[in-house]
Image (cartoon, rainbow, N blue to C red; front, side, top):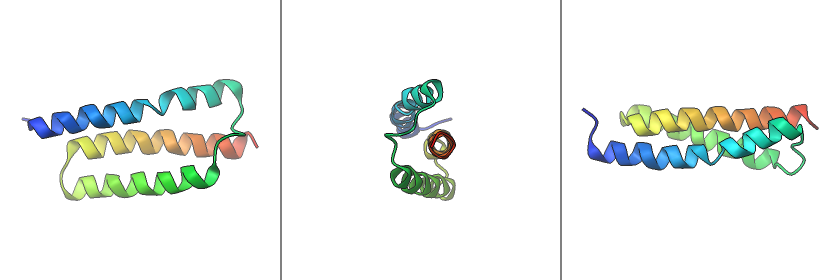
Length: 85
């Protein structure tokens, strides 16, 4: 059974992860990544990946799931930034 604190973590992580979806969608539709910072998203991706690894070590489903999804969305934005230069 998932502990109440993990449910809170899933909800919080879900909201922050969902906040990336509109940016990914807009970048994909407009084929423009001009205003995205490659440095920022690269550092963000590394940080999210480290949070994902941390989540594995502390056995936190919320951290594992939400950071895996956020890392995927972040890497998509990095890909779009490089592709649509």
